[in-house]
Image (cartoon, rainbow, N blue to C red; front, side, top):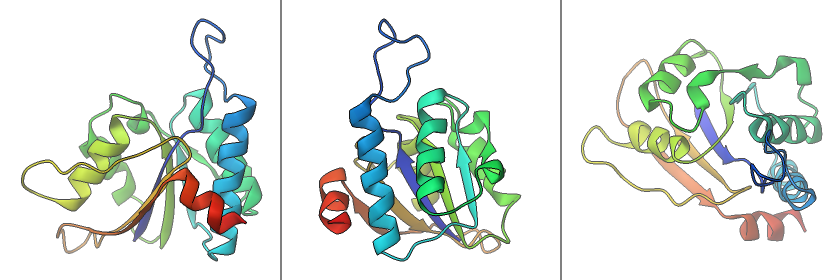
Length: 162
């Protein structure tokens, strides 16, 4: 399974918007990242999101750009910012038949999920930025550590999107 982890785009502060919606800049970040995915020829079998508004908006903008059905987005508390990574991985194991899966979420959980997928030992750190994306390939039935294929920052995705 190819797992793509995307941090939500820039969001309003809690004081400005208690739901923490994406700012116009955040929407642009995500749309640019999604256009880069189109150019890279990446389509998803499954899109999964945290229930928080900024992550849902990220998932919906990305899915819409890639012609993924919006009603097919799975929402799970296991992608909330402080959720345990083993919970998210357990959630994913129910979808072992999927080839390419997008997880739209938050820090610190995305970093912890990446670490859990990549190593059974000490924690590894993957740098995430809003609108950035990384790909980790895993083979759940074998249970071996995954392989980091790439990690792209928003400026890389912007270049790819053209």
